[in-house]
Length: 303
Length: 270
Image 1 (cartoon, rainbow over the protein chains, first blue to last red):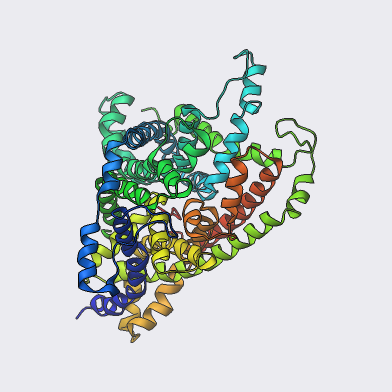
Image 2 (tube, chains in turn red, orange):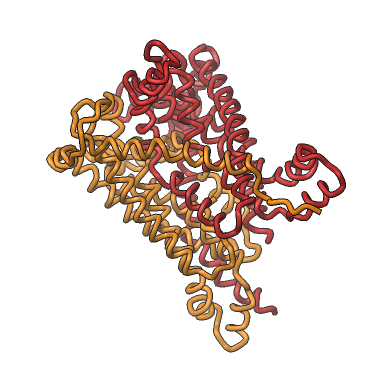
């Protein structure tokens, strides 16, 4: 038996505690979301009719199954508000991810071409905002974008506009906030693949006469696709469910699904509908989530 | 043949603009926290007035204290569990339920927080748990242990395994080989993992909003409810303090990763 296999046995035991924890606090809760999404709203504390009561015996369970209802889901598909919210969430996420890729790629590319010593510095500089509070960074933008904020002052001083522009509560502000917050998530995986790339490949292409754009398009970009995939998923998935940024920066006339879920839960106290909204959001994100999971596993486990 | 510099002017420009974009808003926020004027948009000279005012705001202090306690507790539990998970995944070879295990660990990294928050709250309600410090701590542990696991697992993956094997050939059993060889080598990643878990917990608004109870607001919940009402100089001050705290944490974390061998393994959490 190889040393590696002997080492593996106790290592497997290490899985027990985190395994139990994740099943209990990550997997099992989804069962509750599903259960409550199928129950009726009630004015009570907690505000839903319990569906299952395992202590009440077989007959009670049978009647409980009979009482399960898909009303909440029916509401979600029949009410324009929700359909719009889902469509808007996906649209916003696609647009924002595209902008992020366009902005993040040149930055990551620049980082990868720095001398080795400076790469480490640039890396820290990109990670620091990633560690700094989301909420605070959005708040920083509110400071700048408000009616008599710095941006309007600069624009007025430069005579680019004649009157202050309304920035807050617009989609522009929201996209700005999303791009600002998620930029490190896009840059880091892109940089990771670009930095590993063999510079000789690009040099060979240009020595053989390819103009720079062709070198980029035929050599650099295809080789960086794993990084592009990771960056896109890392941004797209959380943006679809984003709550804080649209809530603080976008107007309230068009909501994203994270906001409607929040509203149903905290303002309307309609837990069943909020749960149903969460289930649908999860279904929308299932494919990108599985893709991300595979990518992450390949990256971490096949060295 | 002409020698080409790898760094073009376009590279330099995009880097400079990108970093300016990332840092300018934060710098402006910090500067304005020292503004003497009550009007957040008018510069009235340097002053520590808002910091003094902050220390008289009891609700804010209490929220900050709550957040710090939750962050320390959840980061510590998450570091233990996340490290165990990383060891199992990178050294456990194949075991039953491995795919589910890694899936559960990677999914929360990108899962929208509204889903995680709502599902945990429904669990706590079903269990009839009193909501407050412990429920938020459990929720944050669940989220942050996944980040710890990824950071530690990526370090374990880059480690030369022949070191462990040599220790065992020299008569160590697996546990003592792990404790005396592997653990010291991955210690910097574990420290970095704790730091990341700490800052993530300190930062979280959505999950904490779902899982906390009445009367135990965390700092982000408190800041959020103030921010909704508009920009206030006190908020600039508390934000600056949080940024300062996180900066200290980052310095410690990057020193810790410096201590790890210079194999070029990055401290990138993702």
